Length: 252
Ligand code: MF3
Ligand code: CO
Image 1 (cartoon, helix red, strand yellow):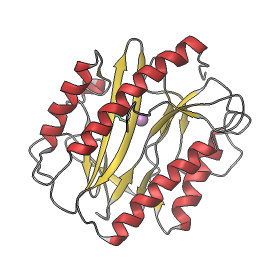
Image 2: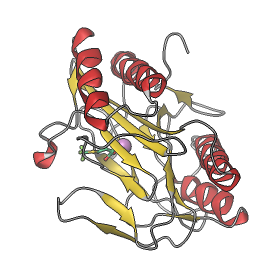
Image 3: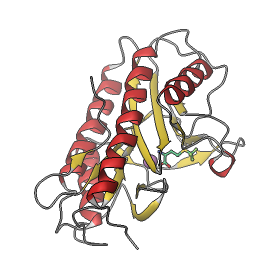
Image 4: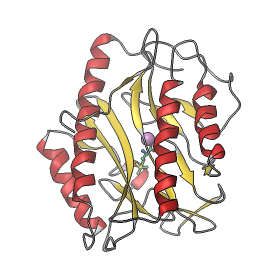
C-alpha cells in the first residue's frame, strides 16, 4: 500500500528533508582533495545531531556509517573510512535523516576540482535525469513514467541507469512502497496521487549497467569499473503540475 500523507505529515516531511538537504549541502562544500570519507562522516553526524535529528542509515540492516560516500566506480552505499579524496574524483554523497517521526533522504555527486569532460557530461546527464524524473511525478501519471524519464535521458546520452537499485516511497520509513526503478516503459505501475512522497534516485553508469557488491556487504561498484553518478531528491506529488521538492536546503 502506498501511504498518502496528510497536510500535517507533509509539513513534518518538509522539516526532515530540509535537514537532510542542509547537511548534504554542507558536506558537498566540505569535499576537497585530502579530506577522508571518514571525516565527512564525522562532520555529517555533527551536523545531523546539531539539528536534533539522527542518521536514517546508521544501523539500518547493520550499516556502519552515518552517510554513504561512493567514489568514482563506486555506485552507492560506500562506507566512510580512511580513503582520501583526490583531485578529479567523483564523490557521491547520500544523506538520510530521521527527524521526529519522518525520514528525509537525498544524494548528489560532487566533482572535485577540474574533472574529465566526459565525467562532467555524465554528471550533467544525471542531474537532467533527476529533473525530468521529478517532472514526471505528477498525479495521474504512473510510477514507470518516472522510470522511463530516467532511462530515456540516460540512454539518449549514451549512458546506462543501474537496474539493481531503485527509488522508493518514503515517510515514517525510509523505504516504503512503491519501488521506483530507474528503467522502464511508460504507463506502468501504480497511479501517482497527491500526497505521495517519493525518493527519486537515478544512478547512472558511464558504461554497462551491471554492478557488484563488495565483500563488505555494502559498497556497490560498476562491474566494468567505469564511473557512476547518483542524484536523489525526495518529492511530494501535488494535485496538479510538477511535485514539490522537499529536500531543499534553507539557504543554498
Ligand atoms: N538513499 C539510500 C536508499 O534509499 C541510502 C540507503 S543507505 C543504507 O536506500 F545504508 F541505509 F542502506
Ligand atoms: Co533513497
